[in-house]
Image (cartoon, rainbow, N blue to C red; front, side, top):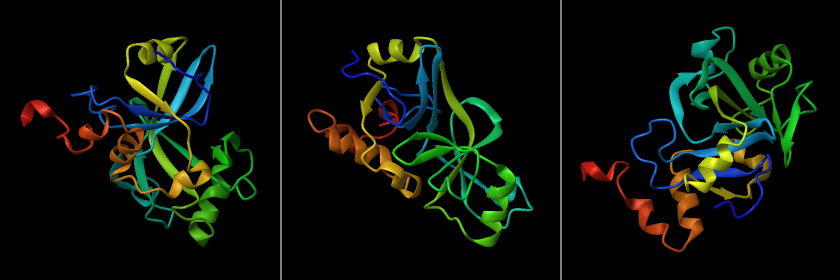
Length: 186
């Protein structure tokens, strides 16, 4: 059951029971938008094997690209914490911004004025239609937590982020932190 209202800027932590779903198993999602029409988020802890330079060769940066989710994986999205440098950004919350002028972003990357602590790129996003996320919450697919990292979450290491979040939940959750991704293969 949903214990608190969904608002943009929160983190959605995949329940340990999500097994076999390549996109969402052990995912942590930043909820970028939520209203009566649906929700949008970005998986923040699943780096891909690509860099921004691999996708856009004129950008001289080796920042990692992350799997943002299964929707529109042929589109590049980004979040950042430098709205004063990237015009036309939309605030998610807590000093985290979504998108903005991409030409400015390319110039900032090429000049080294922004780095992995300021910006994160995603292929695709996670999307839910009207009431779909609430339904998943009621089916115990996700745990809602506050984003205590605020805009510093952009530079947060992703390697063990799901495990760290599960450990912080306490209760019965820490036992899952060291379980294999697919317990059926154990």
